[in-house]
Length: 384
Image (cartoon, rainbow, N blue to C red; front, side):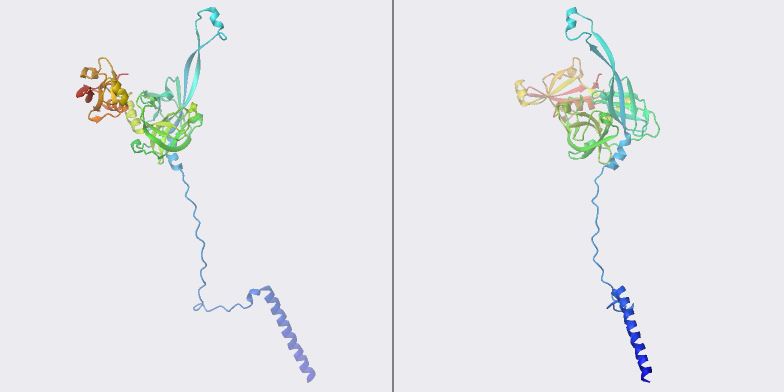
């Protein structure tokens, strides 16, 4: 009996020891089971606290004018010209030719190639560029941004504004959208698109530095947009566009780059381009009014030396037999108003007269000595 009881206790003790050993192994492999509370019923289980989320990281917006370039650049073309240049050559070295007395000069001709840009302005293929880009060219070639090449015809030129209009015949032409140069403000962002140094479809950017720049000696009618957007040789005739990709000017000139001047470029305002473009397409030339006077700005000190009451705009000269002379105007008259609009500068006078239609009449108010006179002048078309 005792022997049977001992064997039972031994079996129970072995089972307990074995169970504890198995539990030890399980806990060693899964320590997270120690002290884990039983799961609560679904209905009474408390909701887990929501962990605080890190704030979403937002990228800074990218400032880009890519959309403006995509709209405008396809309509900007490269213009390649070739002109024949005749130059005198010296057949002798140094002054050796003087030993032979008067010697007939020798001349040679060479081909000079130039680069420029232009802007397609309508589906009919009209291209606006600078007159100086195509002046005296023996051959002209136009290359579009998509690689197509065409030989244009010259529709008309206007040296007074340094503008020219060409035309090409190709299907599906890109056309630039026109803006309003009267809305341009100093500080506006602008992009210059062109063919500088033969690097086609180059875009530079800057701001409008000034508007209404006059008396630069670039053309007869100066009214330029000044910009610091880099304009280099080959940009002439290209597009100056606003941040919406609209044309606001035709890039024309840079100031004294040979003197190291940087960041001063000039563009013809698109509002002036519109009028020139309209007349050249319709008439083959620009129709302007003319009365035959040469206006000039004078200071107060210059006026006193001439015996005039004050400074302003004086009629410096006039053409013999001109409408102004026939109407009784005289050199030395101070211009006060043209057609009721006050005259502030010689450029004002030139522009106002040019706006008049040939065949119309223009009232001119002047000061002659101490008297003010109002005369009526018959406007004629400006002669070539």
